Structures are given as structure tokens and as C-alpha cells.
Length: 535
Image (cartoon, rainbow, N blue to C red; front, side):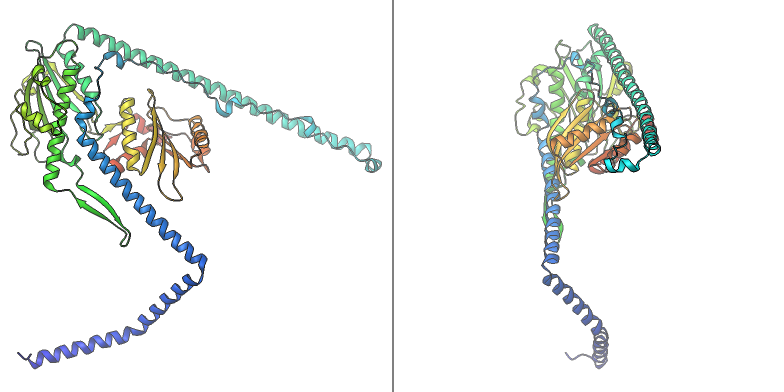
């Protein structure tokens, strides 16, 4: 059907108006095209510029690809950890022993650093005036010779005074360093003695069969179990001696611990990261497996550590505190079961699907917001017999990195570094909370081997620690050294590191790194935050 004349006239006016706009902007478009052509011709005409440009583009693409590969590898490692929560616990064959908790003070070697290196005194030969050549000696009278000799003696005496003052300062610094080293050793010995004395008192109460002590013992067992750092290792326990029953309440991780992406790929053409999402059914299935593994692992660790026959029955409630589903008291009960040691020993815990074992115990993971009634509620037990333990949180629900054990701190560092894009080649820890790592930074040009020294401590690091890190970087032929501490770093350390391939991260810095790369809120003790800020 023919269009109305009015519509045709309007279309004609719009077409003429569009052509006028294009015609008006045409010179600007042509100038822009000419400028672009000139730049391209200049790049192509200069081989050096073209090579630099191409090399920069290639390096950027390699760096972006390496970043995405590191993220994908970290995610794959996360999935592997989640699917092996139970299997990793079954590989531990040693029983829990209170004696393993005893502290043995580790003596450290005194390293005075530059304070232990005396400076060579000045020599008169370096200041004595040169002998006058034969012919010049005729023109050099006694007065001039005496003047040069007096000036040399004056400079020599000044150098001796400077050397003497420097030696006095060095010896004072050496005495101070020795005193600090001795005080730290004495503090370590006193701390270890107080800890071991408390452990002896606890062991004697435990031998008497005190219900709270028995519950505390099994709380120590569960706290010693290493989980991913964002798992809430929070337990409430009560022991009923008349029934030989242990009632345990475990706080389960939320479904957010399951990675929502199944694959990451870098698309160089568009400089974008293609994310393949994980299906909702797969996320729920993985979460159900995680919950089942945590429940079975908890039961395994409790029965395996019962060396005195305290436990005939364990009643376990798996709780979660996800937003919108939590009870006012301790949360939503997802799993509740009661089992005996004989019944649990009959399970085949090596099955690929842990939910089958959970079903054999008559339990299942619930996704409904309707709370499952616990078989035995801890809130109905005498609170004097209830022991509560929490590894990763305290009153403000944040991780206190200083209070972590040496193994937990090593686990934290092991989780953090890969998420920072650093591939761990070697890691070693000591009982005093120091973790030494050799990692690899995959970034082109800026990357290479990196020495990482992480220290969990309460006192500010001194310059000697930074000097040791610098020597380790040199000995390893690494490109950089990173010092991470939960305490402060003094000004002398910052001054020494200036201009060297060293990066110093104090307590405030490590809080930011953990929050940025792991999403976990952490804290330092109040006094340590003040010390860090003061340094």
C-alpha cells in the first residue's frame, strides 16, 4: 500500500537533514582518517618503533594470559581441595596427642649484622704528607714542611676521633642487640613454660574424667584439623559421662564456598576474560558433598582420637548461619545424626560420594529454610559442661592472625600467595611462626623468582631481619624479596630496603592483602594495630 504523502515528505526531509550532517562532518572525518594513516605509516616506516610496539603488545597479551591461567589454576585447586576434604583427613594416621601441643623453645642464633663488624682504624700512612722530590726539596723550606706535617696530623687526629666515636656507637648497638636477643629468648622460654604448665594442669583434670575437660580435649582435636581458610571452624561440644556421649555442634560453611565459575579463558582479540558459569544443580551437588565430607571428617577425627574409650556415641548437629536462614541463637540445622563407634567403623569412607555414607547413618543435607530439629540440642544441656571453640573468628567475627598456630599461619600464607599470582616452588615453616617461601612471578619483565619471608609475631621487625632477607635474595639469585609481618616495621628497616629489590609489608598491609585476595575479614590485636601505626 502507498504511503501517505505527509509521511513521504517527512522521510525526505529527514534524509536531506542526515545528508547535511554527514556533509558538514565530512572534513573532520577525513582529517581524522589522514592522521590515523600518518601514524600507521610512521610506525611501519620505523622498524625500532614497530618492534617496540609489537613487543609491548605481545608482553601485555602474555601477562594477561598468565593472569587468567593463574586464576583458573587457583580455582581448579580450590575445587580439588573441596572434593578431597575427607580423603585428606583419612591420610592422617597418627592419633591426636596432647604431648604434641607442648612448646619447645627454639633457640635462635644471634646475628649482630653490621654492629658485629668493627671498622678498621685510620692509618697514619694514609695521611702522612708525600716526600718532596729532589729538585722541589730545594724550594721547600722547613716552614712549609712543618705546615704540611701539622695539617696531616690534624686530619689524622680527627679521623681517629671519628673512628673512636663510631666504634663506641657500634659497640653500644651491639650490646643493645645482644640484650634484645637475650630478652626475646627469655620471653620465649617463659611463654613456653607457662603454656606447658597449663597443659599439665589440663592433662591432670582430664585424667580425672572431668566432663568439661573431655569436651575441651575433643575441641582441641577439631581445632587442629586444617580446612580451607574461609571455612568457619567453630564448634560447641558437651560430654555426657553417664551416657558416654559427646554432643557436637559444627558450624558449616555456606554455599558461597563453591566457585561459581567452571572455566576461565582469556580472549586476546577482545582483551576479555570469558567465564563459563557453573550450573546451579552442580553448585548444589558440590555443596552437599562438602557438607557430607565435613560431617564424616568430624566424626572420623573424634572417634580416631578417642584413645581412652570415652565415646560410645556421638550426636552431631551441622549448623549454618547463612543470611535469611539463621536462628536467633546458633543458626539453621542442616544435618543431625547420632552414631556409635561400631556403626561408624562399618562405613567405607573411601567412596567417591560421601553422601552415600551420610545416608547410611540416616542423615541427609537439607536445603529448605525449615529448621531440622536436632536430635539433642546443646541449648538444653547444662552450659557449665558446654565447651565452645572457634578457630577463625572471635567476638568481632574476624580472623586474628597473631593467634593462629604455626601450621595455620603457614596454611594462610599458602592460600594467599597463589591468589596474588605467585606460584609456590618451595615453602618451609618453623614453630615460631616464620614461613620462608621461594615463589615464581609469571609476569614478563617484572617477574622471576621471589623470596618471601612471612613472620607471625607481635614485636616490630628490626633491620637485621631485612638484611637477612636481602642476603637470601642474593644467594638465591632471585629478582625480588618480600617481607610480610603481622607486626610493625621500624624506620631503620625501611631505610635499609630503600633502593633495593625488597618490598616490606607490615601488619596493616597484610590485612589488606588477605581481604583483597581472599575476601576474608581479618584483624590484629588492638595493641598490635597501635604498634603498627606507631612504627
